[in-house]
Length: 135
Image 1 (cartoon, rainbow, N blue to C red):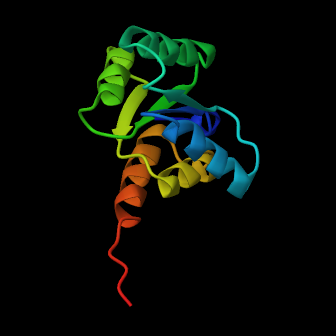
Image 2: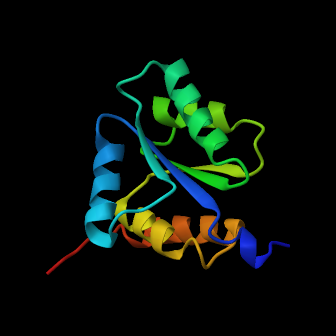
């Protein structure tokens, strides 16, 4: 069972192709202001080994925190590299299909959910945000 001090100790890492991760992070900060413990890595600017190393470095910098790695595309190189970086780490999970509503909920609600609840909430929020808007 997690304690109150475990809540809010979740770091986030966005790993995406091109500048998508950096732009998602910038957009989150436009909406809610500067956020801590949320990082972005471009899977396009680094070789695979360097992406894995960059993820592992961020995880190490947040030692004692749990981490969610948000990737853009299930099965793509960003996802594969995130899985390599998280392999064997019980307090690190990879979530594919990152979108803005997921990240907004992550940064605004991570202090209120424990790790497992946060994962369930983030996945549900991501699915709920995909809609056909007909008028």
